[in-house]
Structures are given as structure tokens and as C-alpha cells.
Image (tube, rainbow, N blue to C red; front, side, top):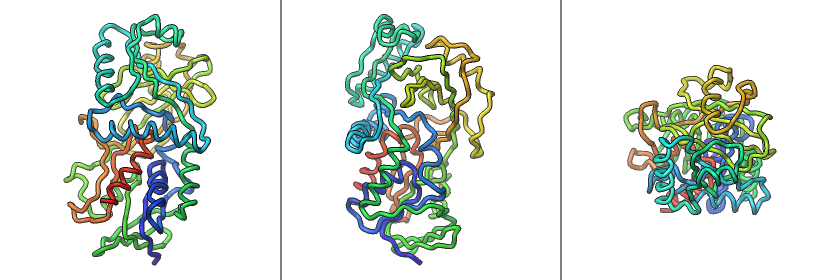
Length: 364
């Protein structure tokens, strides 16, 4: 049995960020990951967007940590030469009926202290992005995109510089709470004893919470998997901003994002699923086309399947907004267990601020 001080389960962008932050102050930090490399699920299957914080309710963790994380992520990228672009984005109203929602979004962003928000009219929309269709837009200067692979690579190397270890092919199969420690058993027959246990398991965070002993259903911590697909096109060029529709209740909508080669991709949609399956078909192509053509001209045949990702959400199909769940679980009988659940969007943007929140919890 190997004894460690801090054991972090999961090497997605959140687990790696937590590992970097904690290894700056704590000795003997280990990150374990069931896959063969970091970020094989949600962290590498997303839009790579740096969000601003306009969408989330005032005083929510998502609002607070997104705003803080946005600035921290840009600074980290600059310091460590990680490729990024501060593109800004335009949320478009494509009809008069959507204008109240656009105004509400600006007001909500203002409550969250997002700076630089401005409603722009049709002529300015056309000046900034001549190809888009909009009666008005909300200009959001602080949005952008980042190379998520390079980000995770740097978080891993910075953790290791601080003498943390990242160990792959380590699938957790059982967790036992002792009086002061946690005994964690892995499928390769390794066993670790940890003083502090941190659940950053992403899609599998509910499994880890259950292994610890938490009744997730009774505690309203059931995780729902929400699949989002992406399409791309080579026919639209010279877009400089991210283009977003008015958001839905469960997502930011099928938006136009840019990769770092300035290629356009659209997505994600949002459909709840029961199985971990990254296959993509053209089942939803028509819905994509209908959504996209509202704000930019494109022929359906020029939409091509790209990829997909799955998010772990606390918000079920019929639920209202659910915040990040980041909590030390002494109240449930599990001291020194930090439980991170439902870290969906804006988790990438907030990864560094989430890590600081975990550090703050451990320091109190």
C-alpha cells in the first residue's frame, strides 16, 4: 500500500489544474487517471471557448469562478506561451422577438461584473461581421479560444515541476473511509492510502462519490450525461468573432466558433444520453442547418460532421439551473473529501479559479 497526502482522481483540465494549485502548497500530491493520457473525455471534446460569465445567475459559483477564471486563463496562456485568441463574441438577435432576451443577457452580464458589454445595432453587426444576419447583437469583448491540449500539457508539467505525480491507467474500483484516511483500490491491484481525497472525475464523478459512501440521489447529486455534436464547414471564411444565438435553458445554443486555424465549426447541440458513445451520425444535421441559417447563410450540403463530446451535468432534462458543486463533505461524514460534481460549462474557463477554490476550502 502506497501512502500519499493528497490524491486527486481525474486528469482532465480540472484535475490537472487542482494538481498544479495544490502542489504549490501541499507535499506528496498524486493525480490518478483511468485513461492512458490526460483529458480524454470532456476536456478535449468541446468548443475550446474562453467564456465571459454573462449567462450565469448572479452570485452563483459559475458566475464568480468564470469571471475570475477568464482573467486567470488569459494570464496563464500569456505566461506559458499557450496559443489563444481573444476574439470576442457577438450574441445575435435574429428577430425583434429576441431583443428582450438579448437585453436581459446584457443586464445579467452586468450584474456579474463582465466588462465591456455593449448592444450593437444591425449596421455595426454587419461592419464587424458582414456575413452574419442580426437585427442587433451583444458584443462580448472578453470571450476567446484556447488550445486545450497545450493548456493541459502545461498544467501537467507545472504539477510535476512541483513534485506532484500524474499516473495513468489507474481506474478506481473501490474507496474505503477509515477514521482519518481513504483507502483507494485500483483495477491494476494498486492500493493507495490518502489523507485528502479530491473527486475530479468528470463524467464519472458520481461513481466516485458513491464509492466514498455518498447517496447521490438522496443528496440531489445525480449526474446526467448530455451529448453535444459539432459540424464544420470550409465554405465560410474570414470570421473574426465567435457568433452565438440566444441561449436555451440547457446550453448556449448551436454557435459558430473558430479553431486556432480560423476554421468555422458549429455546435454543440444538447441531447441527454445514457451511454458513453462518441459516435456521430447525420441524425441532427437538419436541426443544425435550421439553427445555423438563422444567423449566417450556408447551404446544408456544406455542413460536415466533425466530432462530439459529453458533459456531466447536475441539471436534468426538466430541471432549472444547477450550479457547480464544490464542497468538502464533512457534513455528510466524509472529512477531507473534496467533491467536485457537475463541472460542465464554463468548467474549462474556470479551471484555474476552481483550483483556487479547492485550495481555499482546504486552507480553512
